[in-house]
Image (cartoon, rainbow, N blue to C red; front, side, top):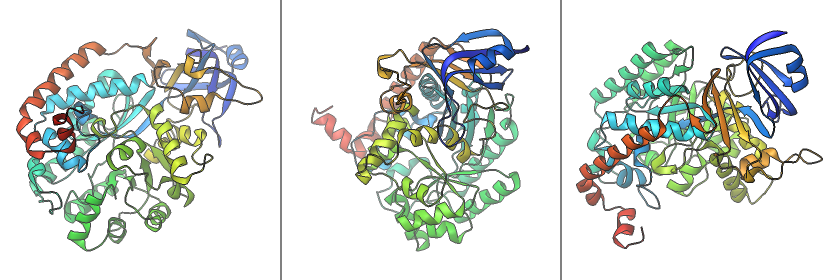
Length: 476
């Protein structure tokens, strides 16, 4: 018998291989080091392998770790301050963000990562400022991360600008942020046994000069890496692009040679059906953040049109000040339901599609499907176990109807996740994170959030947002 480190056996298994979910009723997985050695029926694995650690997964679901393809953990400290309102960014987020200190961003980020990890997220595609500091959270907690510095030329006091006016650009800000992204790549790409990787992160075509955008494009080609960028993310962006260049976002990006397989386009909220098809056919990929755009804009981006046009798309949770919930199980449900409502068709965006878009399709979008996204021999050992005896999974049926995947997407809440293995290491067991002190991290971040709120008071009052008025009217 071949010796491995961990065998997980006797569980219902989703490999996510093939066109569906790759269901094995009594499945097992053998892990050696940080790699999956074998996947198959429990009888087969147990007859061919022995392990130091045996995990009995009876009444449990074994599946790949979830991938959050688009998240800004550095602003999670502002959760709940900008909902049910217009001008979310200008009047809701920016009055707070203006007063955010780097160490406070780090504190909030760690709590956000804890939140996602406890709901089964093993890969975080984090896209935020001061990633040179946030990266250490991922190294400490043991999560997989694909990171990008948020590059823009926007001054800190942008929130003071009247809504609709053209943004001022400061090239020194842009150069400093670009250099941070390049330094991040140089210092952290493929570190932690390959668990930490780095790509480039232009904030959006409206947030920087064309010169800086083209400079980032040159670096992407030199490094042969991806560009993680907001694209057509709102009417605010489209207005800025039209004012500056006399055309809409998609036409502008196509003219500049930026629509290609390097681009990971986030949102496409304001893209027309024709523009959506152009992006899909260009080879660019799409990240759909259902909860965030639903709450912030009350809209459903054209993700299904993108898929119908032959594009590859996946899911992300975005940021806590807009979505509130950085839980990919919740995101799968939101994505499916919102599209069913949009198209008035219960068959649209089924549970399998949602689950694939949070696993293997997300890995394809991010360019890491050779490593993660499914359970297959040779891939990295990122595995989660969920408790199928939880009320949310009741009843568990496998014949003639299999209902585990629909219940995962439409009923589960995230707290069914019991064990999280990342890169072959057990990071969470019995709902306890083994690498950081969860309560202490939350305590530190809570204290920081309260201090920011005090410092930002005058700017919050000056913004006079809808949510502030709700407080005054004693509705909150």
